[in-house]
Length: 66
Image (cartoon, rainbow, N blue to C red; front, side):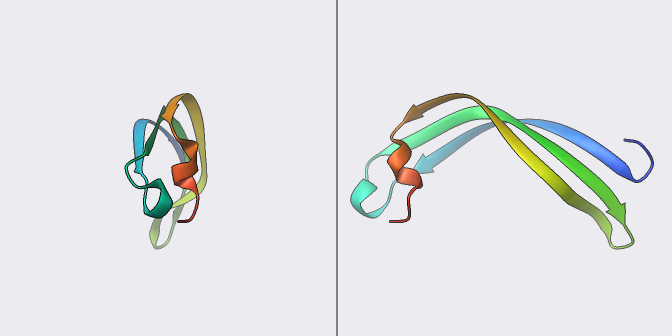
């Protein structure tokens, strides 16, 4: 944190379950969120978020609208 700016790093395991034509399938990824924040009069505001994926497994098709 530096004044009215902050940065946070969060490790994540993200699981997606398929629906519709992708029912019964899944997709999972692991990685790190790199978030940047700004303090405003209303509180902290997320100004930037980047997800760096380090591993994935499964059917990426479950991410499609279905």
